[in-house]
Image (cartoon, rainbow over all chains, first blue to last red; front, side, top):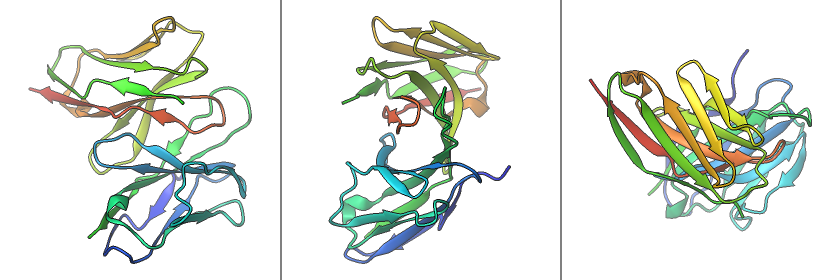
Amino acid sequence: EAGVAQSPRYKIIEKRQSVAFWCNPISGHATLYWYQQILGQGPKLLIQFQNNGVVDDSQLPKDRFSAERLKGVDSTLKIQPAKLEDSAVYLCASSLDLGLGNNEQFFGPGTRLTVL
Amino acid sequence: GEDVEQSLFLSVREGDSSVINCTYTDSSSTYLYWYKQEPGAGLQLLTYIFSNMDMKQDQRLTVLLNKKDKHLSLRIADTQTGDSAIYFCAGGQAGTALIFGKGTTLSVSS
């Protein structure tokens, strides 16, 4: 079974530029998460999708961050314009979410963003 | 909201046992997880425990949960150099995002 795919793996941009990340979850997984992991910290949720609908975007800085999952499969996360403090690893995770029991989240390798 | 605290570093010798500790604040977390992160890699689920359990053993891993004190621990028996990584404690409920601690860096020397 293929895992969660993310691209690009690394990105370096200057502040005020825009950037987009892509995630392809495990086939059949209804729920998709984007987490931001700043160096030395644990991952923190940015947005959660259930199929193509947003479940939780309360911690997404909506003035500069946007995300979509139009067909309920892959997803893109965009930052525009980027700030220095956006330098982090952006992790995508997916889960099957049958609504019962443990709902293991599978993580992709992440995209490491450096904003100069 | 939920807060998860972990000690930041642990250094052990190869063959010894490692114990990584975690405390959490939200008693509504129904599942508590341990993830491993190696350099440049994503998070790998090691094990999890349901909140009504006290202990779970899985090969070299033992998870202990003290729900009264909101304390979770991960014991790795016969620690190997390949166990060197960052270990994250996380809490959550089915279908919700996870709340992670800052991670404990485990260093194993030979």
